[in-house]
Length: 327
Image 1 (cartoon, rainbow, N blue to C red):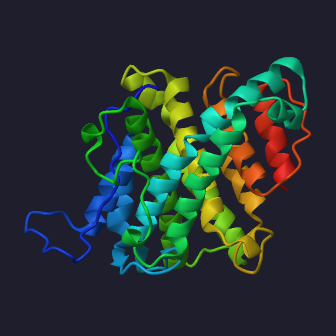
Image 2: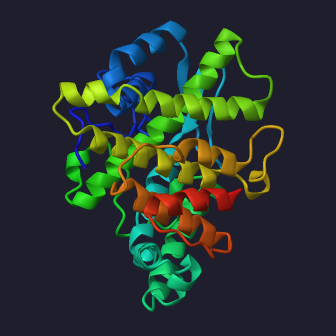
């Protein structure tokens, strides 16, 4: 995939465990740099909005659960939640090797997906290992500190130094995790704007969908002019952003308690959020976005033991049908 001139970086705020050097940027500046790198065509605009709203960025002590929220005065998260984005993102990437063989068979032959999965003789061990990885990532939510879980030996520790990752796939995942995290932080920034402007929708579920839609639009509109200016392939830039947002959708799904998946007074149904984030991209049929996203969604469905008697003749059709089945 074509890389943008500016590379998004995972923010690793000072946790208080070691003294911050006088020359280190503030947590607020670190997050701003992440957003500018993730959406470089709107770097000046996001800096202007950052200044206009004057909100803080608060790194809370790590605790059980997930910490990522906002009000009119600040965006708050903890470093454990950032670690969760990294660990689940790198783990979810393995869904491709687990489910792509059956996906290829199903879309090429018109065989129902559940049958294609059954005839994939090698899937069993790969899927077992995959579920173990996802379980490890999920255990991080219940832990108080990242150090309390057993970090997989083949997943690098979170770092802001992309070049330190020698593996090409790890660098690709670095970019996608950074984009997913940027999406989540833009979502929270929209909450800041709603609160400060007193313009929030009438219900909290509507506000959540509004924040998702705004973050997606912010990351994907204006790409054509940006790609042309930098001599990049528009479809490749768009697909990379879309893949990062699809990964964000999977991470948000994992962060949402099971009892809230069908919606409540605070959150819309999780399937509605996934659809808002994933559906409707005008990408070529051969774009890697479609098989990547299909494999992520198949993994979600398998984790929830959902029926997969789906007949689809393309990866795009498979994504659309999987989203429909999640409802």
